[in-house]
Image 1 (cartoon, rainbow, N blue to C red):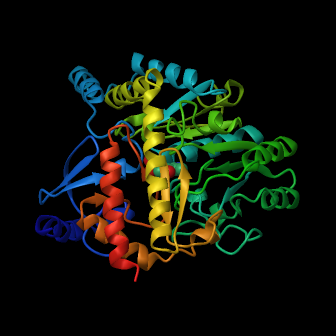
Image 2 (image 1 turned 30 degrees about the vertical axis):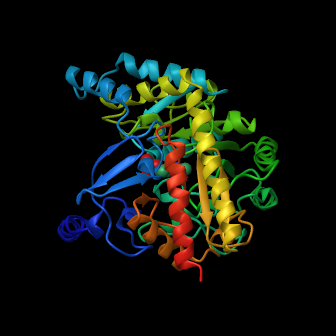
Image 3 (image 1 turned 90 degrees about the vertical axis):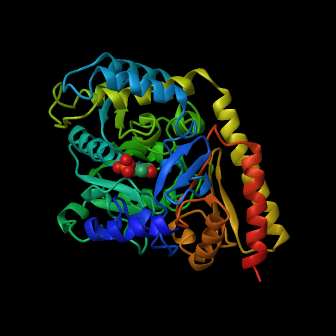
Length: 428
Ligand SMILES: *Cc1c(COP(=O)(O)O)cnc(C)c1O
């Protein structure tokens, strides 16, 4: 840990909190973040040379595992031809053609540089298209850090937007209304009280930023119906679920069509990429075809497009990737459930496919309030013991474990054996 510790000490002097994204600082689990030097397949190595089996996968993008040869080769070739032109390239067309062929109902996409930017732009488009200002989101759903999305409004359905962060103007937050995840009635109530004023309902179809919470049977369908009845657009934030649940993401997986979708993470193959898309009729409202302005100097960057294209091509052509990652996720979830029974531990395993979570509460977790009941101190002990044993999970209770095609059954078995040992140590 010496080198990581020394690097963090230096980092704290010149980077706020020592990191370029808050969760990386390990604040909620204590201890020193590991500085990573290299990764391959399911493994990470830190600055002190310690090896880990990684379940963060750069927070989702590395669905094929780290440093996949096919992506590396595509990136290297593209880089040799030039890093950026600020003019259109063929790869942008190829990525858009591939994405629209893989996702049902997705007719057009616009590339941006992050998930935050994708959501910010999709919300602007929804407002421009509908001519309405208010947006409904769900407590505990994360949609990036743009002003209007940094609102979770802790205390119940009826709360008007209260910002989560200093610096978000009350005026920006007031048009963001907050509903309860998995509770369509809470949405119906907000729609009724703000009749004719709602531009969009935005949801993570599988919530994966308050731990992992799956949608209850009929929840997403009911949102679809409520949006149709009220002239609001339904936005699926598929920055995590897109191209992960299956080729067509949550829309295909749950059989519900959204009007607009946002993407990020996987579509960049590890490079900074986001995208938003939907029906032509709506997407044509974006400049230069329409009056909703959105632009980006580095959007559709040739090297980033090469990475995304290579990764999406594998996902499109090799169905065994989804079989494999879903199987590994299932193996992990079943193994954890057995351990929870063995130790009579007050824990709950949630998730679907290659997105899983172990909540440190024995209650059912269906929304943000449920998730917050977790014993985060116990989680922190579990996390740190697993890290010491060489298993790198997200340093927060409220994040997902990501499974990649580079993980093996042996990796999962080793992880479960370490969890068994850890439970023996921490569950008195
Ligand atoms: C990660 C994430 C974002 C933000 O993406 P960035 O690339 O970090 O800006 C938005 N929505 C969801 C659902 C995410 O998981």
